[in-house]
Amino acid sequence: MYTAVLIKGKTYSVMGHVFLLNQEKEIEKKVFQYLNGNEFFDCKQLDVPDDDKPVKDEEPKETEEEPAQETKTYTESELKGMNKTEQEAIVIDLGGDPSQLKDKSERIAFILEHQEKAGE
Image (cartoon, rainbow, N blue to C red; front, top):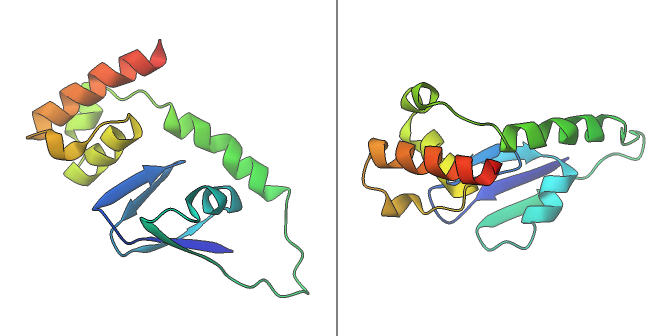
C-alpha cells in the first residue's frame, strides 16, 4: 500500500486523484512512482506482510479507469455546480495556474476553452 501527502500548495490533481494540503491519501503504485521524489509530496510505501500476496490483477483494472477521468469533458452546468477546489484541480490538470484566475466565471471559462483544445 502507498500513501501521499501534499505538503506544498493548496491542491494538486493527478491521475484521477485530487490532493488537498496536508491530507494523506492512499494511492496506487503507479501514482506513487509518479509522485515519489516530487518536492510537493511526502510519499510512503507501507510494508506489506509476506503472507499477503500482492494482487496484481486488480491494479490494472484501477488504472484502466483513470484515463477516462482525466479526459472527462465538463459541461458549463457541471462546472457551476462544483466548488472552488474542484474547479482549481481541473485547471491544474489542463496546465493552468488557478491563482491567475480571479473568480468562478474565469475558472469555468478557462476550463471550457482548454478542454476543447485538449480534445482536438
